[in-house]
Amino acid sequence: MDRRQQKTRAAIFAAFSALLSEKSYSKITVQEIIDAADVGRTTFYAHFETKDDLLKALCEELFGHVINSAMDSAHTHGLYSDQDAPESVFCHLLQHLQENDKNILALLSCESSEVFLRYFKDSLNGLVRSQFVNQNRRHNEKIPEGFLINHISGSFVEMVLWWIRGRRKQTPAELDRYFRAVIEPIL
Amino acid sequence: MDRRQQKTRAAIFAAFSALLSEKSYSKITVQEIIDAADVGRTTFYAHFETKDDLLKALCEELFGHVINSAMDSAHTHGLYSDQDAPESVFCHLLQHLQENDKNILALLSCESSEVFLRYFKDSLNGLVRSQFVNQNRRHNEKIPEGFLINHISGSFVEMVLWWIRGRRKQTPAELDRYFRAVIEPIL
DNA sequence: TTGTTAGCGAACACTTTGTTCTCTTTTATT
DNA sequence: AATAAAAGAGAACAAAGTGTTCGCTAACAA
Image (cartoon, rainbow over all chains, first blue to last red; front, top):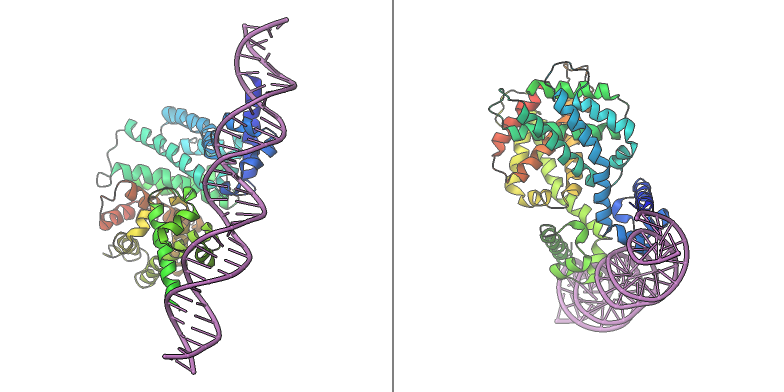
């Protein structure tokens, strides 16, 4: 690949992320993005069709590998199958969010978080579902599986939001303990 | 009050709601709204400062009385204090959503649902919190109260979304049963 | 070195926004 | 019924943003 393309793409992503932490998505103009990224107008539209397209690309870039690595972890360790497993998938996920990708947490706490949340939630839902089908389950026949999957992934996302809004005072391990406390009783 | 004002306001709300069920909020123009509402441009801006302002007003109008009536119900019946209470607050809330205000469900399922969700979630959080302070609680000292409150209201909202996305095949009573099954074990 | 590709910058047609004006209609009040 | 006040219509407006096109330059891979 051409180095110029990668540089341009990275510059646009960086500028866009920086702007997102300042103001809401809808109030950011393409002009501001290209000014901050220091690229030409034509260049921007050569890379992305619209501002929405850029947002989508950013989401994919950010959540892509986080969820993928969680997927791997889930396939080896299972969801919460072995009791008191020191490293659960969710704990890993939280650590990943905290350490490797501070950008993600910034974007999840920004004014336009809804857009990112939708991606996060959808990805997570797939992860939980894949674990449910692997694990041949027995309890809770009275409660639909779809409801449980949604409840678990939904609760997790809500917890992350609560965590961010509270300025992340808890460690991933603590959060994981809380989460297990509200999730394991129903599994 | 002047009848004209009310009519205009109602017409704008109706037009806006109709448009929201067709396309996403960001793609709706003021021009489309005033065309659909059949009011003058000047009139629109006499009522609402911006499109965002209109959205906010619509949210307040829709969620205002639903949450208020749930608040009343919560103060008399409690949250889930008396076991097997046939009418819980959440059940009432679901029924309210289903019967009285089909508009709300339409808006929650539209492309711009995130905006409404934020309102819904915030309102609900206040409701649950008000119940927690009334109820002098004893269990779960290890889990922060804030986390539990967020978990309950967050899970409820996620459930409503799941319900809507699945075309509302369950009755409010069924949903309430599911919800109790995942919430009561941790109370 | 050379053909190819990416980027620049200016100009553009177009859409949307929010305001300002004048004029007409409806309303509440007496 | 008469009238002043308020609400709306409609056109016109500047300002800002969008997405595209053009010709030109610089960087790249071979």
